[in-house]
Length: 119
Image 1 (cartoon, rainbow, N blue to C red):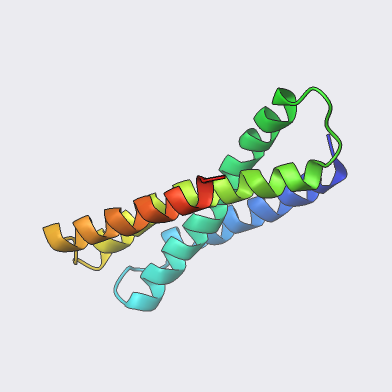
Image 2: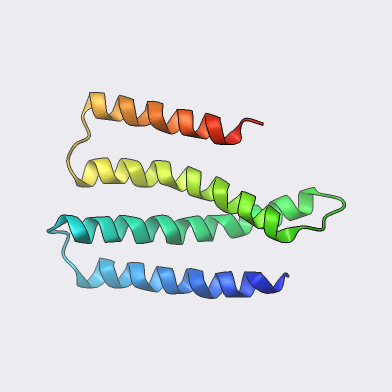
């Protein structure tokens, strides 16, 4: 396992700890708490999902030398996938999930996925 993975696991554990503190000790009564909750959830889930994606990407190559580049690509993929979920959670948390907002969000999200994954 590459040495930077151990550091990422520690950082990821720290973000999950911060997220659980927000979850257990704060009431979602103001916008700052909700934004902190969603932001920490986005970072923690992105880091969590990026590790299995990295190992899958690493095993798929026969000759592989640049592990940091593969991890950055895995982190980008994980961040884009999780940002859609967190965006929907934000629409729901701020009670603005109307048909128009949902349609516009899905259009923006699908265009950002298309733009980032096209070669």
